[in-house]
Length: 333
Ligand code: ATP
Ligand code: LTN
Image 1 (cartoon, helix red, strand yellow):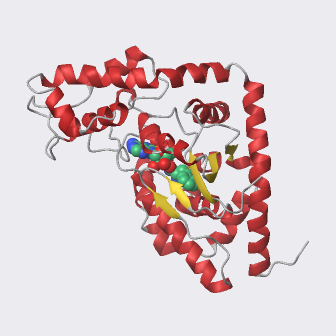
Image 2 (image 1 turned 90 degrees about the vertical axis):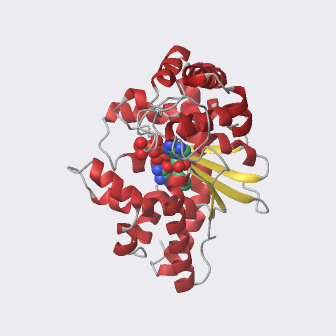
């Protein structure tokens, strides 16, 4: 099972909508590189998703679909443990303990909490506030060394480090102190409708996001409509957030540098460029779309992947949880 000499990598995605190219480029695409050298665990974080209201039947469907997207993106189930957060009760149990080692002040400073409380002003529930503590529990349960995420999650991983250090100082070494892993590009893909805002899978404006599973026609149409800046030159410059975002997306999918992209589209205008980005993106995602359809035709197989993943994860999680319970002074069963 787990190889003691290997380091551990852990990450998660909420089943709160259909996954976007932001989730792909900022997170999932970077996971594959770890599968041979690390104990790797990837989790569909359904407990996190209910911090915002979800329709129960949709949440259930999306949870399995998110697992299928992980696999369609190339995550090999014989090398990676893929599972659903609510299937491993230790996440909620450790989160409770860590709540008692997390400070009101530090949670109040989390930018995601501030953003989401603005967005969901009629439902600022306690779960939204303690969301980063549950995330710390996810990470610390597996003695994780690295956490590959988009740049929006860096602050949460830093909080997980602070909580781990605080606990270790109080009770002697218990947790590995994790490091965030932020790739060199694609770590913050912006909305196509407003390039000053992060692309987010729960955005209600369908034209703002490109989904991993969108059809080629939809992808091309969305890029055609993408909000760009005044001017017509394809150039990477701070005063052109819309073009910078499209250049980033094109570069991530094609592997071309910004310089090469500028040369390629010299004198050609935005229309040509948008079409090329749309085609590049749609063609790169097409094998993922096909594999997803294939995987989804066998739900029993997917459910079995989740079941086996949860068994492996539970075994590892329980080791850490028992250690924590002993250290804080809970009576042995
Ligand atoms: P929601 O809209 O429900 O808040 P989200 O689209 O922000 O969801 P998460 O499930 O919160 O997605 O994030 C999963 C992973 O994808 C995280 O590692 C996160 O950093 C990354 N990620 C999310 N959006 C982007 C983006 N626009 N660019 C790059 N990475 C992203
Ligand atoms: N909060 C993350 C999702 C998440 C996560 C994690 C990421 C939950 N638990 C543990 C990495 C490690 C987000 O992307 N919003």
